[in-house]
Image 1 (tube, rainbow, N blue to C red):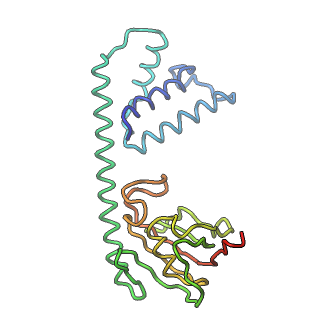
Image 2: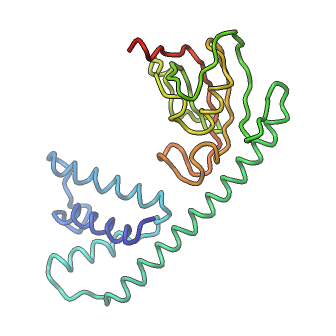
Amino acid sequence: MKQHRLAAAVALVGLVLAGCDSQTSEVKLETAPQKASYGIGLNMGKSLAQEGMDDLDPKAVALGIEDAIAKKEQRLKDEELIEAFAFLQKRAEDRMAKINEESAKAGKKFLEENGKREGVVTTESGLQYEIVKKAEGTQPKPSDVVTVHYEGKLTDGTVFDSSVERGSPVDLPVGGVIPGWVEGLQLMHVGEKYKLFIPSELAYGDNSPSPAIPANSVLVFDLELIGIKDQAKE
């Protein structure tokens, strides 16, 4: 979590709630600005809760807002606030580190078990693949642009991206994708369908490219190589 992110988040909550009565029973949600204000506050609350800050005290937040609006003397010294923010930041970082560690262990266990299944091949890099449909077409090179259909999932089956659902295949450079795809695509022949099991180190590692893909995730792709584009004709 970036430094002072919590402080910025609380400040934003303050802006959202500044025009509201401190008694929630008297808050009206009738006009578009009122509804939007509530929606912003709701989304911010959900975001903070997801980061392990679900024990923030809404009444204390409201008290801070009221004091600031009324230009009252703040009830806590800056040093106390900085210490409190640092505590929550450290706690959130520790929780995330634990989650990442558990995710890495779960991914390793999944690959160990998956590699024992009949039909699953594990390459030297650690990439695992399973041939779903064989074909005798051309194999792409790193410099090629290919047309593919794919569906990406987490190991629990959660779909995070799918050209199949969108109903439209995509063109992409073989050498311009995650390492697991770069290797997997060069194993395939045009017309084939593979299932790729990509270790996190051949995907996004300890980074989380989106909320849908946690750090250290093993990614599972159903991949169909439809064709290799003739770039000379373009």
